[in-house]
Image 1 (cartoon, rainbow, N blue to C red):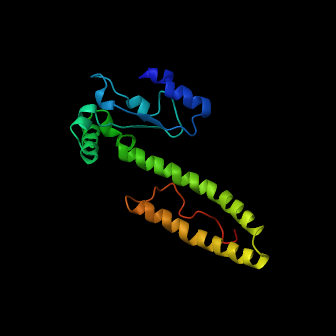
Image 2: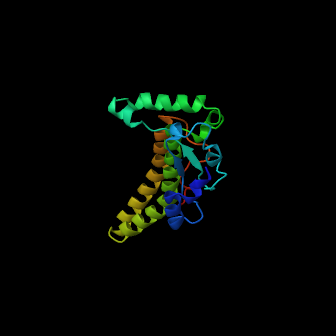
Image 3: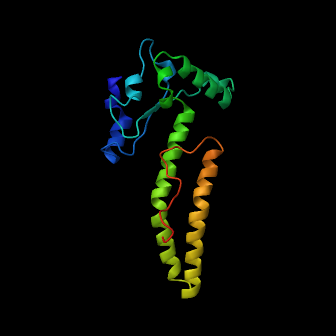
Length: 179
């Protein structure tokens, strides 16, 4: 397990993210590790800590692909593997492709929320220089109103189709009505 600290992937990640703040570790092929070994300490973020931690997944094997195993069947087999494994069954919040998808989606939503105010300001600044003053003000008010009314609802609708929104994400994209 400790040879992960020397992995090429983490060395490259350290070059662009020296403190591990933007790197999420994805451990693949956990189902084919040597008998008696596991990646539990890595998944617990104890070996090479990353702020976003690690998620373990089980991919389709070459045999699965050759025999046309569906993605649905592969996800079911992955879930069964983790649920029945002596170490991984107690850490299901760090295991599985659906967990990885949710984590990546949360990261993307957070990044969009961080970038949206700056993008909005740049857009409004750009538009205000091109439109007549009265039209520019009307457009600005409309964009701000639409932004505050529609975007949080769209994010909520996107999340609620599959699962509830992660609890650590704010329900609104902007604070205050005067922005």
